[in-house]
Length: 146
Figure (cartoon, rainbow, N blue to C red):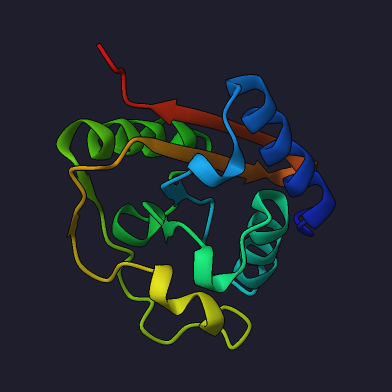
């Protein structure tokens, strides 16, 4: 029941991008589901496929769960608030305790912030939650241009 489905992840991400009417190259930060399990490598690969972005062009990818733990049903809401705070504050929060990345994630290591990153140019964050039974959700947050 908890087995990750990379195809479901790709469909969910692509649908959110299509609904937002932006291109995948406009994503600055991924606030992933990332739970520090063996499934993280499959999630990162699914993100790369969905965004058609290889390691050298991959956006920042961060995990709010690395700082607060997994809040189960509340995780998506908390992570959405974190995404909006990053946009409003012009920063990218770190992923804590992930210095020893899974070997399949190592090509993307340069996209994993270990400390807070100032990012005044930050414009678009995509947030996803991939749940039990392949119940997936993805939302795109974008800074308002007045």
